[in-house]
Image 1 (spheres, helix red, strand yellow):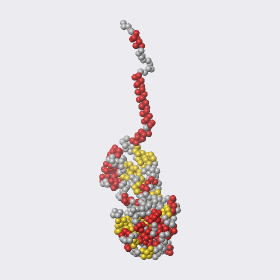
Image 2 (spheres, one colour):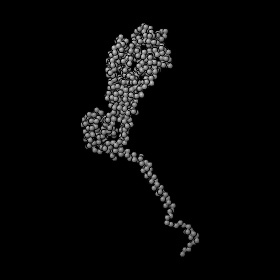
Image 3 (cartoon, rainbow, N blue to C red):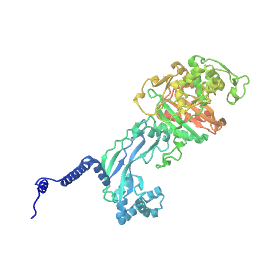
Length: 612
């Protein structure tokens, strides 16, 4: 028998013994780990179901739904009478459903055969596929991932849409789109602009006022199956579109049509490279409204590829506001007006013309000014200087003004500045002033008759229109607005006195009416105006090309209370010695006669029209 020692008894009494509810350290660690795991799971569930709910829901929806951008209906551009110049019509794009066609080749083949039968010609023209191969080509199109999501045909009309929907073709769907159309297919294109098949505004009013016209796009959702195919093809709208705003222009479609007709005929008759016609309204409270801007060669909307746009970007330029030229003798009335306004001359002032005006003792080369064809006119007054278009006389008048005054007036005429027309792309022109190192005293003389200065056609006509707007230069405008109906000088600024303007009206009428042979005359109406024939400056060679001319006529009809101001410009006419008096002037006569008839302007009494 073994006896227990005292120390053994003491040791055994110090051992821990298990009791119910007591947890040892290992179990505690397990409990803590388990609690942490449960907490992590709860946190994750909270994160997924609460915090990330919207995002995950959207991701899940994105796998089931396809987002379709729905373009807004573009605003209509109308003329001054409300006639549509540019409008959008509903059309449809035709798509093939790749997933469905792959799932059911037999049904796909049947749909391809029907499409080839009903739309084979359109597919042939659009894609260059021989009509006998259209069916096979459609099947290949649907198989190819690079093309399967692209429309087979764009801008189907209502008849084509109805045909496709009636046939209920398998795996074929139509998506609505807005197609831009231009009822007047041959004019106004450089001004109106263009919207391609992608809804992009490329130039003109369409681009300038795109934010007003385009509206706000919406979006739609279409449900997909597990394989990505479309279920149903009828989108449920997520956000409705907001249509664009309409824009009313001051353009009169009939005046535009007549202007374009006469311009195209003039280019042909006189073998000119290009040309422009501007018609500006001068009736009460409508002064400055642009009734037509005709540009040739024409840019026909039917010749524009709806995918790639025009073949040459140069054809889209609105040359009335974006190209400059030396105006020639149409500038002479501006010089006369400023001299009259300052009192430097009167209408009775006599200038003795010797045919040459010299600016140094040698009087050679670039130091002298001569009249056209070397003519000498002797003693002439201001009316005769304008009527005979005497270069030396205009140069002499211009040099009677101090340079500071001369260029201050040109500044008031906006020469070298934009007119402020409500179209983008206007350039400022070019004016050599005394601040330039290349300026000479003869520069002021040549500028007095329209050489050595460059203007746009819109600058030229608006400067001369000052004589008919109480001596105030107003801004031309092409957008209709009630804000335009303000006093003339509040719509611009004063250039010359109203009295000087009245005198210039009489002088301008004398230019046309006091010449029995003047070709700008219109039977039944008095005409005021001025021709300008200028040698073209070749920017490539830096010299003037003696055989190339710009021919311009600016006319006002009826003369004393004009309804219209009209500018006609031809670039490099080859007939009639390239002279404005026998090219642009007769074009004015023909056009003005038709415009007076269209506007029903009463003919004047015979004693109101001076004929000599």
